[in-house]
Picture 1 (cartoon, helix red, strand yellow):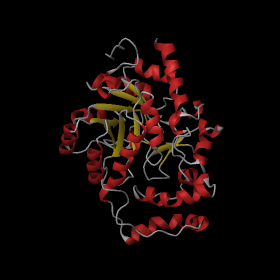
Picture 2 (cartoon, helix red, strand yellow):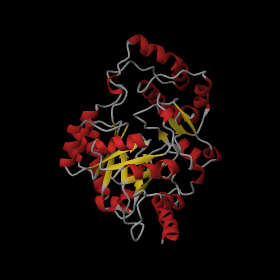
Picture 3 (tube, one colour):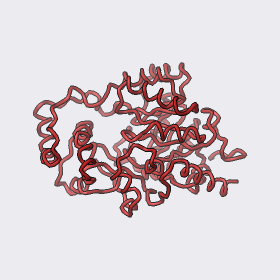
Picture 4 (cartoon, helix red, strand yellow):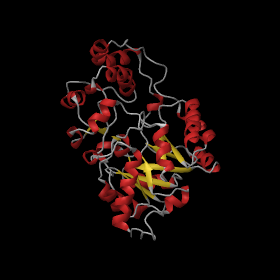
Amino acid sequence: MTQKLPPGWRTTRITRALGIDLPIVLGPFGGASSTALVARVSSAGGLGSFGAYSLSGQRIVQVAAEIRALTDRPFAFNLWVPHDGSDEYRPTADEFARHLAPLQPYFSELGVEVPERPDRFFPDFTEQFEAVLEARPAALSFVYGAPPPTLVERAKEQGITLVGTASTVAEAVFLERAGMDVVVASGFEAAGHRVSFLAAAEDSLIGSLALVPQVVDSVRVPVVAAGGIASGRQLAAVLVLGADAAQVGTAFLATDESAISDPHRAALFSERATHTALTRAFSGRLARGIPNEFSQQVATGSQPVAPFPLQSWLMGRLKQAAIAQGRSELISLWAGQSAGMIRFRNAAEVIDDLVAEADRLLG
């Protein structure tokens, strides 16, 4: 049975556990998070979240200090758990050259120096985790599974609420058994990467309407619904389905406070946003965004894709030059399936609209 809503929809197990006023969680954006947006959402009563998977340990500590200079309310960090051997992936020189070759014309067109093979593609997960322990946010969320038990225990000793992300019921049960205090049920409507870890992402595409109540019925810990939530109607709906909070991504991603590029923001407010698709084009992992020329070339097979994290690293070397030159067809345009509902350019307006509509529906 799904849970009954307590008196007043704003008070749930999530709000009580984290000391926040609203059951609204900011989706953590890898590469597009900003301290300003995190602080704005937290100060308004929700839980601001910062995607830290590409940050060094030193930078994580700095970001925490920057957020605390803007707000004294709870906030969260998000990390990617090493998955499918990605943390140990070290291509040979020949492999690196083979995967780089299809992208060399773009490096030439943009005037970007062809990169050399790095020692590693992203910061070490253990270094990042140690930095989060030092920073001591209210919550730490994970995608692609859960960290080892020893790390889980150390975070709990610091009083940090641990949040795991599931794309299936089996993953939700796994995360609860792994010691997660909260489970995010992420429907396939969500923007960005599909974070499946027990089965292939293509075999784990469940919509929020089906996923959320099944996860609620399968675990005892609080559940956060994610995927396609951009309005107070959808917030109210997932609370009625038994969720303790809603994670809102794309609606906040489009605001002026986020760190996305101007071409990305323009795409979110255009008619193009009414259609999103899943692609491996920009990272090597399955993710949802607005289709563009590059992702369509990958879809037709005319543009090869390197495995993660190499593809993500290579496309990252092109990104800033592509943005500067207005080449939006060469950058990821992450967006969820409710992107066509976006109306606001200010994070405070997004929150006010979510709350007002949920108030009207839930009383």
